[in-house]
Length: 342
Image 1 (cartoon, rainbow, N blue to C red):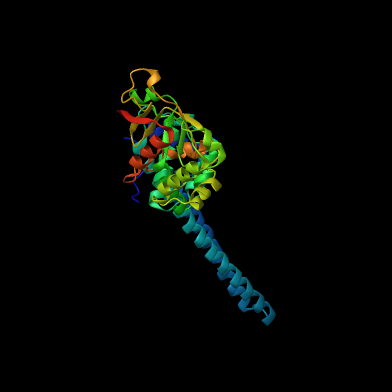
Image 2: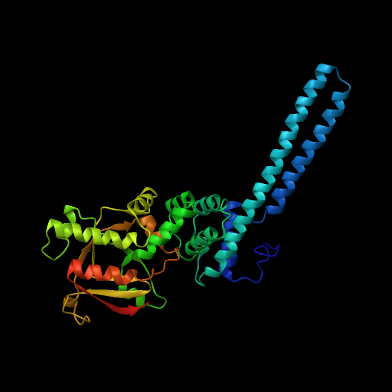
């Protein structure tokens, strides 16, 4: 990384300047990488001088004292190696911090208000992201920093902790889960605003597990055997996209999804498009009566999962949407039509 990255901020837009100043005020570390290294090197040099002095002293002492001096030399050498390791770690962590900030800058809105971010949040954020060296994972942390600067409170401290605890495999799994989610928006009309407002009320993967509770959510008269067959078909859809029960279980353990909730849907967002759930005889909604409210079961994002949904690179797996909508049409005796594009 070049020396003129985030250090020269004179020509940057106001939100960028404010964000960098806010980070510096909260952490006291942003503009100190050279200072940190200089202090550490000075400490290491002092330790080396002290060791050399002790070696000279040991030469004129008795054999017992010489043995003691050699032990002291060994200890001092250990301290020197520890200092070198500490310098390397601090340099790597500072580089991770600065890379994350650089990646966040292009994502800042003109009306961003970084001053509204709480100092404790910033301290916790950099305590977590400083350990991230993977480039793609740094992208996620940068999106969170920018999102918090654009709208303070968008990401909870709990979300930071959960993200920090996830490895590359669980991050990929969560991204895949979000790619399968149908999203119930808090206010679909705001999607048409300028700029559009995208607030998630609920987001879930509508898998049918076949338990008794689910028998009443369909409008069709359905036997236990028919429910079992539908459950097997539902499960086969997700297995075809790499999701088995153990994968859902891993996301449950991370606190990103929950598996025992129900939610009413008559509209949903998927892959940048808004869809309406209608009565089977309706093909375009002209009145509210044309919409059909269905109760969808399955695995849903928790509040933290909904926060982190915004930083995933979710996309529609090939053929998935056609399979899941066809399944929902049969299971709920409904028609599903596209209403608009985001």
